[in-house]
Image 1: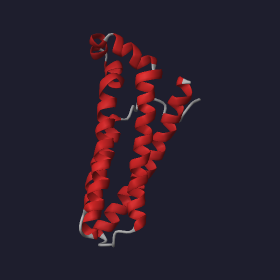
Image 2: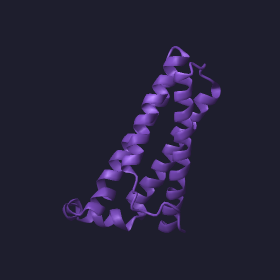
Image 3: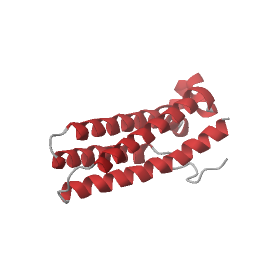
Length: 149
């Protein structure tokens, strides 16, 4: 079960990245192109947010239930903090990605609540950019980029 959920979590990473790119392109295009905020803009932001929620759920299942890495780290947190690989999965990955999910939700909510189209696009662009930067920082680049079942 661990291998399957980890592979789905890995596949979901690419869905998140693709939706992030689409959301960023639409936000910046709308902001600098002075386009009207559309239903598609709202939906793309919402899909990006939902994909992050699904990714978070999968990550929490791994973190608290299935991962032998985090299980070992939690059993001896002092030793885990001394080893970079264990510290990354026990603390850094979880914290940075949780922060990225929060930032995406803030961006989605603030863009939806803005008064005009320019403000909606600008808020989406700024907050989604921050979220993508956090995702890139928190992503485990040492892991295989292609899911292996």
